[in-house]
Image 1 (cartoon, helix red, strand yellow):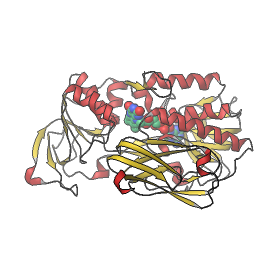
Image 2 (tube, helix red, strand yellow):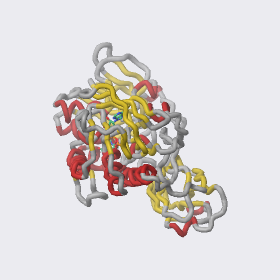
Image 3 (spheres, rainbow, N blue to C red):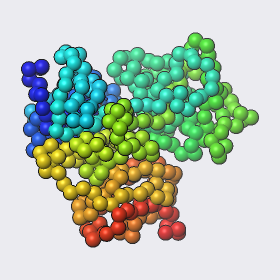
Image 4 (cartoon, rainbow, N blue to C red):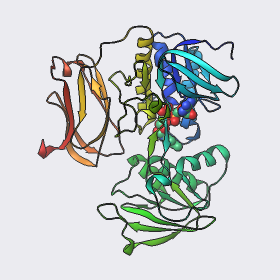
Length: 419
Ligand SMILES: Cc1cc2nc3c(=O)[nH]c(=O)nc-3n(C[C@H](O)[C@H](O)[C@H](O)COP(=O)(O)OP(=O)(O)OC[C@H]3O[C@@H](n4cnc5c(N)ncnc54)[C@H](O)[C@@H]3O)c2cc1C
């Protein structure tokens, strides 16, 4: 493999999950020849390899696939396109000249040069420390994703009587998986008055299996010295503070945490990229280029996606734009800053270019009914129902921003009566 590795690549992609694989396919389609995907795991596919349930690919392939099936389709496309994949290799650093420092299990220490880099490192799960749940530190408290890996890839059950804190999608999917494996799932406790997972997952994973979802509730104390024994669960007030006067105890031996994902941004911070505190990922232009010229970002490292199909779509574009820069075909830069306004929790990209089709992804701060999204006075779209868990994808046709001479536009979502 060492001899086959080139010293200089058109595009190097960090991360071989669905984002990295699609970025490679996009870069190849745009004409890049020397493309390398690097992943620290022993095989490409990213988190999809542990997602053995179905529900992937409904948008992209118009078929319902499992995670590994979805990943395999892209791995085949990458391999048949002559794109190199280096697994069991960790990208430690990216220098200002786009030189990548890589440690490979098989090849040792490597230095590779890229003309453009795509960051596709995915995300990691928030842990107990992030929400500072009081109590002891017994065995049996873990993230839902770790439990998913144990059950689906190692064949190990994390426990027998399971409680889940947070109603993120991974927690909902694990509630169903563990019930199917014969465990008792005592309940899902969500601090917000609404689920943070997709509606389809609440219905298919909880309702269909009669697993109770307790909204506006949290775990107020973790009991057990060696192994988890029970939880104190309390309803929360409007400030999300637990009301201990109404608390109750729940006996269980395992607590799964499904309390959010954070972009894996070690390399982004080492590169001193301009970051967006709302997404936790880097700020990007409409061509998904970060504040470091020649470095692009896509997938969950940029902002946490709800559906892998959107990851793929975004990453195909990131790969294409990275290839254009590598091949000295850079497009004119953006001329309009995009400012998230009323009810917008986060918005990607952070700037737009007039005269081109623009794709915008955003999330709302709270559930909204019968509302209107506006981009300045240039564009509006009505929605009947929006949820923070569900990402909104918007395509602005080129004519929307044509002959716009301002330097910024606000994006807002307001209930119909307020517009
Ligand atoms: C535990 C978990 C379960 C999920 N389950 C679902 C689900 O059921 N359905 C769904 O639609 N979405 C699910 N998601 C969301 C899912 O992450 C996205 O849909 C999608 O997998 C994101 O793709 P990605 O390529 O951005 O990230 P990932 O799939 O996470 O891939 C990133 C890859 O980058 C590699 N990497 C990171 N840093 C480096 C480095 N420095 N050097 C080399 N390699 C590196 C990682 O090893 C990983 O393979 C889940 C997420 C998590 C965390």
